[in-house]
Length: 117
Image 1 (cartoon, rainbow, N blue to C red):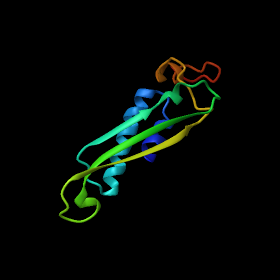
Image 2 (cartoon, one colour; image 1 turned 135 degrees about the horizontal axis):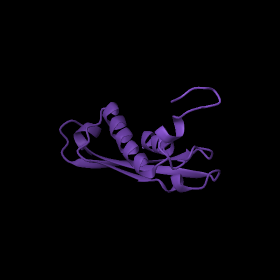
Image 3 (tube, rainbow, N blue to C red; image 1 turned 180 degrees about the vertical axis):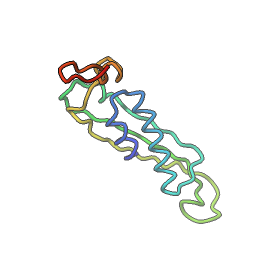
Image 4 (cartoon, one colour; image 1 turned 90 degrees about the vertical axis):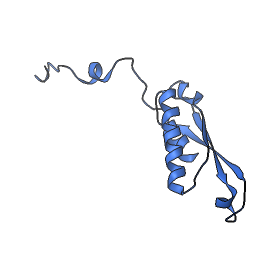
């Protein structure tokens, strides 16, 4: 949940944040060696919509259904859902999308320097 919340908190777009959080959560679970039967990732991205300069957060909740045999004793039947939640602060001065694409905003002619096309 920590990796999911942290990666979501640095995104500018809530949809991108949710996708990045889900990817980060699955990667962290895989790295930990847990074999999840089912994984759910819920992300509260309301903090990404807050005005510039306003303190806000992003919260991720990750649930993983694991076999009890992996958690306790080999051969133990059944499953158990493990859930973790983490809240990460959103940078109050993070950049905002200015409404134009990178090609329009970052490329162009700098006539004062004599460069560009």
